[in-house]
Length: 291
Image (cartoon, rainbow, N blue to C red; front, side, top):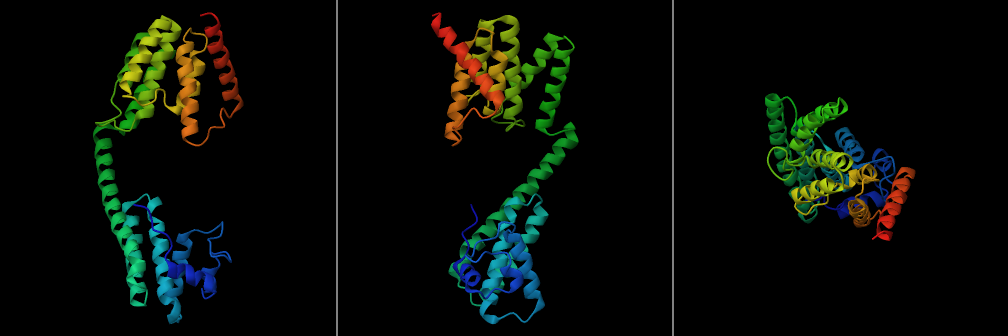
């Protein structure tokens, strides 16, 4: 559930010129937040102003509603469940004050729903943090951290020349399911495992061995893209000159496709990406000319 739009009575009081100066400073003449301000600033200013007393009864309800909106707006980015609940408690007080000072329930109902939703989110976050803490107590790290450590050991073994031991660890990480179980969501570490296996096969065992690993990885991903977009250019570069232009072509095509889907189709971007892109195209075109 997303935060509802700014209530109409809040917009009205902002543009009416009746805001106290300490609150009005956060808005442009058109009623939008200034570049330097956010709704948490408004909430703090409203709290201070309401606490000072002597508030005009005609704007008290709308000001309280603006403060409630500011408190609710801050919840999405709050990293601690206790802080979320504290801000939410204050938002509830301000919503009650807004209704007590004439704001119609039609304007507050969606904010009440959002407050309840974020209360549930805070409870879920609290449970998640407790589970994470218990997991770290038992295993010494998060699931992501455990895979990262295993990849680090594999890299060290590879650098030391122990290829067999390194490949065993890379495969151990690669074959973990990123879809379910304790390593759910660790897709980027699993991806590194497959990329390293593919790189090794291409450079040591040859094109057919590389194609076999490629098919294994694609099957493991259940239709999702391999490699992940964040690793596409690096993997394409690592495979240049190893006799697998067919794999490189798929990697480049799917990277461009992913960029277009994300609305960033003006790629490649960096000089390094342009260099790799041109080398990849040359290799792909060269393979077609000899068929």
